[in-house]
Image 1 (cartoon, rainbow, N blue to C red):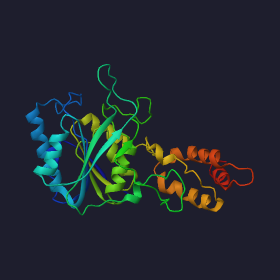
Image 2: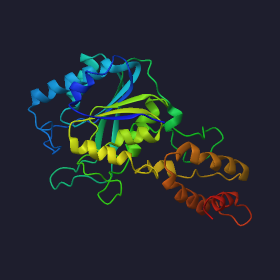
Image 3: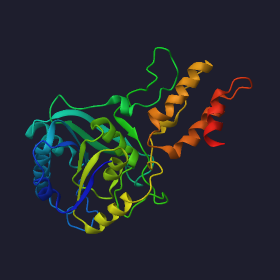
Length: 308
C-alpha cells in the first residue's frame, strides 16, 4: 500500500520542512509564468521574481533528493535556458535528458506554427542515479531473434495525447498532465515503496500515478480547491491510466512461429499494459486481426479465455 499525503500550502515553504536526502524522485510542473489562472498569483510574476522563485525551490529540491535521486521539471520555452542553467551551472546537478513531450492537438495559430510539444528537463543529483529501463520499455516493431523482445528504450521524444475535455478523467485544471506521461517518469526513476515529491500538485496526476504503482507521494498544492479535487480523484476506483504511449499497444510483426508467438503474447500484457487494463481488449483484437490463421490461432484462444 502506498502512502499519499496532500499538503495545502506554499511549495517553497513546505519543501523547506522536508528532511535532507529523503526523497527518491521529484516531478515538478511549476507555473510557466504565462498568466494562466490557478486561483493565485504564482503565474503572474515579473521576470526577476519568477527567476528568484525558481532558484529557491530548485535549490531546496536538490537538498531533499537522495544522492541517487532524479528531478523532472516541466519548463515553458521562455524560461528553459534559465532553468537549465540553474540546474547545471548553479547547482552542479547531472544532466540526463531533455525530453520532448509531443502531442497531436494544442493551441491553434494563424501566424507562425502551432505549438505541439512541451519540454521536460531531467537531472539527477549525482551520476549514480536510479534508472529502471525495463520498467519503461516499449514493444519492438518486429520480432527478430537478435532483438530484446522485452522491448526497446522509448527515447527522449514521448507521444501522449492531452487529456481532452471529453475524457472522463478530465479535471477542472488548465494544465492537467496525462497519467501515462507521469507513469513513465515514476516507473523509470523510483522503486516500489520509494518517495516521490510533487511540489506543484495541480490536478493530482502524480499522486494518482504513485497511488496505483505502489510509490509513496507527497503532493504540495497552494490552491485549496485543487487540494479537494485531488483528494476526490484519489478516492475513485482505478480502471486504468487515462493515456498511453501508442507504441505500447502495437503487436510486433513477424511473430510467425506459433510457440514463440504464444510465449510473447502471454508476456506482453504484463510487460507493457500492467497499468492499462482498459487497453487490453483492443490489444487482443489487434492480435487476432494480425495473426488469425485457419489452422493456427493460439492467440485467439488466449483472447477467448479472457473475454468470452
